[in-house]
Image 1 (cartoon, rainbow, N blue to C red):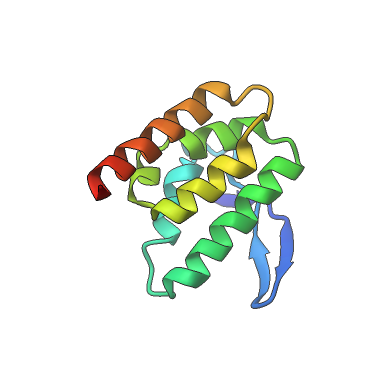
Image 2 (cartoon, rainbow, N blue to C red):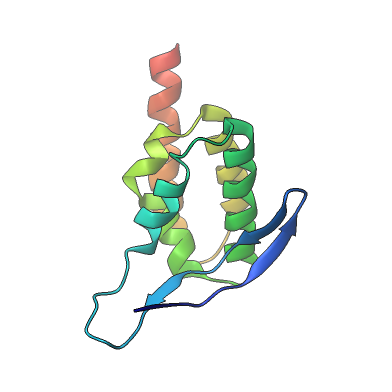
Length: 119
């Protein structure tokens, strides 16, 4: 059985899940939360709403100093599918945060590759 560790932030559309799920100590492997997180954004909601939720989630991770999750988000392969403007926003949000330099550089490289494709 999965026990959620949940914290909510208020958004204009209502409460938003901002914490990870943890597997109970019943022998179930830990859920790969970042995969679940990016999977959520492949649903049927509007792109604008998905982007807003992604930014809110990342802001919450940063405000809670959850460097592990910030690093995982910035280095996940799914970031390659994000729009250029969203990548730029994430780069601005995470610039100068201690302990995410490597992940930041990875995201910056993804951003540069996407710019070169669009030129």
